[in-house]
Length: 126
Length: 268
Image (cartoon, rainbow over all chains, first blue to last red; front, side, top):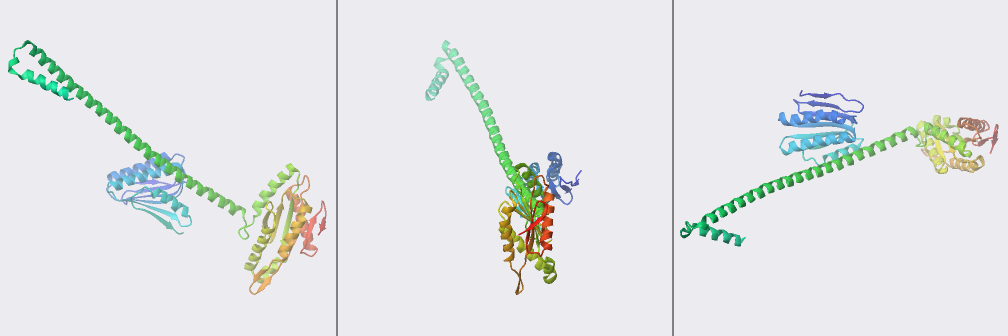
């Protein structure tokens, strides 16, 4: 399985991993009952892509609310990207946020703090 | 160390000196020296292995402590970010609550919030036996303002009225927009005689209000119906008596305040 396609729900984000394009996208709120189960497969996908694909990987994030375990999972994913970046693999993150909610941008900045790979925080006006 | 070395050298010299070959003690000394050397090398091997174990344990300890500190840093960061998400949600909740309880035009309490507070006050009044007073206020000839000057001026007048009311009421009073050009004042722990000076203050505040329309100024008045909660009465009954008093004020010429008596009305 190289494609990842998890439909979103009220408490979980929609997640798409496009192996051939090298894009992992997530949209929505994230407060799953079992975040290990949800993000475990995403982390597996990222690990496999970085190990096998040999192509650039970009994350396109449209995330709003994250509960504590989702924050942890996301930081684990960023750690994987940071490791790949140290090994000279081209990785990047585009964090899109609603321009009416600057506080999401501030939170994205907190995530970005420890990342040395390209990490853009982009306002979206509706 | 050097004396050990000297002893070694002495023994080596004695053993290698040909004149001692065949001496009965030489065989004993040679075996003793060999045993000494064996033990020494064994000791060194033990020390080396032991050092190896020690440095392995030390490295493990270092990497464990490094991992521990890295995870601790991550945990602190997770907690910090999580706290900020919670702050965001709490503020959002507050904003939603405000939006659901405030009148958009005037910023006063809306009907939903008034109802909520009326229910609370009814219970409080039942418990404490202290009455509250409701004052229903209706702007006189407001339709004419809208018809003559347009809704934009009407809206502005309502905002100005709201500002006057909000300035004049006491801290514990609640002033809200009941609907249209009707406002409701909830005066907790108050009897009608205490409410009268407050109502007079409001009336004179409104009389002094001037709403600028182009180069002209608009002045206005309001009619009031006031009722004090009677023992055993529900808030909607009190509200009905205030409403009836307001109707009476309207019918008897407007720009006045009518106090609801137990059953009938009285004018001030």
